[in-house]
Length: 192
Picture (spheres, one colour):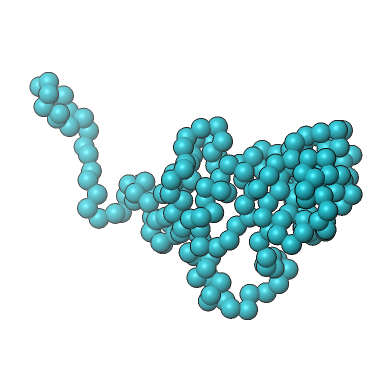
C-alpha cells in the first residue's frame, strides 16, 4: 500500500483507537485542517492523533517522541507532548502518535493582535536553553548534533552577534593575530 492509497478518515482513526487504545475509542474524533507530513485529528478535548502521510513522517514522529518530553519542561511556551504510540497494523501500515492538544489558533489562520507580546514570547522560546537529557546517538536532532549543540551555535546569532568561527574568517577584524610563513628552527622551539 502506497501513501497515495491510504485514505485517513475519522473512521480509520476511531478503528485504530478501538484496536490499540480502547480507553480512548469513545472520545469524539475531529479532523484538524493543515499539516504536511502528518494529518492531525483531535481526540476529545485534550488529545490529538498524528497520522503520517509521507514516507519521512514516521522518522520525524520518532524524533518528536524522543525529544519533546525532554524539551517541553524547559520551554516558555506549551508544546504538544507525546503520550502514546500507535503501532503499524493491518488497518494502517505505519506507526502513529497520540499527543497532548495545545489550545490556540495557528498563526497562519489568524493575525497577531498583541505584536510585542508575541515577539517577546517567540524570542523567549527561541532562546530557551534545552539543557539535560541530550546525548549523541542515532535519535538526535540531525546528523551528529544534539539540541545543546544546535542551541550553542544559534545563541550568538539570536543575540545579533557573529560566532567565533565567523570572526576568525573576517580579515578586517582588529586585533586578529596573523601568522607568518612557517620557519624551520631548532626542534622544540615552535618557530614560525
